[in-house]
Length: 464
RNA sequence: GGCCCCUUCGUCUAGCGGUUAGGAUCCAUGGUUUUCAUCCAUGUUACAGGAGUUCAAUUCUCCUAGGGGUCACCA
Image (cartoon, rainbow, N blue to C red; front, side):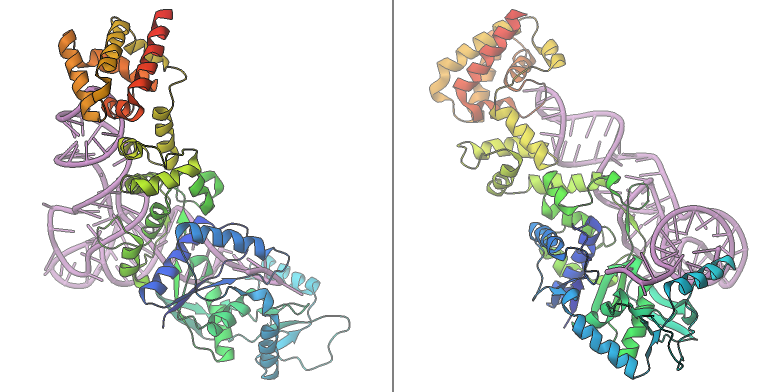
């Protein structure tokens, strides 16, 4: 059975790039009806893993990712790691190193001065003398001293790293706490991982972890190292490039389905297809199709996808989403009409909310340029007589088409062009030249409110 | 700097020795629309550079350049 995992270190919030690797891992598991596990890499106890976990779960919930079984905390498994350390010590596959930090620093400085690669020199590897006083030793694992460490990466192909690039790295600190590369290998093996999908910043950790796998006799999972997401300039994604916290996308009015669709296409594709529902992703995703090269974050595409999902979302669901953005129309009697008239002109829920507010509440002021253009000539007279006409027909006005008919009758009776009334009317109702169709707006707000707004506009015009 | 990885339109990508190098986004133009948006149509734009291999290279190999990652008692 396929088993994948997401193993964040608790940094406080879920990063957009982290969400993509989580998504890839989740999809790989769901595609095979396997398991997707969550593990918190908190061997550094000073960080608050509870807070971080809450933030991650919150983001998972929002986008709809779930995980199987219990969350695994590495901080709660120290006894387990200790057993393996003792085992390796007993088997002579790891050893105590009594070098002090000062000695280590001196060694490194010397190497760097000679332009060598900083590297532990293995001086305690075969030590059997009397250990120096007053030093709490670290434990180092015996890495191979010659040959290559080779593994097949599912994304990049065969990776071959010379053994002398990997030194006898520390698996337990002088206070006894195990280190990252050691515990990751143990947990991945014990948790039954079959595929490890992670960022390619972990590529160089892999040979170290392989040393651990081999020392402990564990079976290697398949590794997939996914290239990073860069900003639009091709540099590392930072806060200056926009939102990096997944939950910020909710605040900005993005739909989770749009965000997932955007992310899944960064580094993965299925022919020419652009739109993927989560079900389609699960059906079509295969980690072997992940791209080798890094991709750039592109806001335009995200926005386009978001607009697409907004347009195609049922109004009921849309209304529910909108409440988080200050628009309560779930029980509005013209909800359908209102959303049908606006959902195609907002790329985000925030923009859509702005559009709706514009219709639902009377304009507080008129756009200067729009007013100048529309409120001139016969505008006031035309508006006034149109309002009167609306009042006459009030009993028969319910739907956009009926309002449209009145509008047509009006221009015919007055013998004026459509724009002569449409433009002033638009500015009267919305305060600007832009926006939804007049017929829809009038039908949504009703005759009384329409007349009201017209009268306000007329007195605005007449006041000069 | 050592080691490793990457390189097709501005961006996301298709391609898997022979294609008018395809799609999407963006941008531009036109159409639809009383306006804006949507929608539709059309268009501009790419194989990083150089050597090979081959009848034939975007595709295979090597080199160069550029970009990225990594070199902790962090994860």
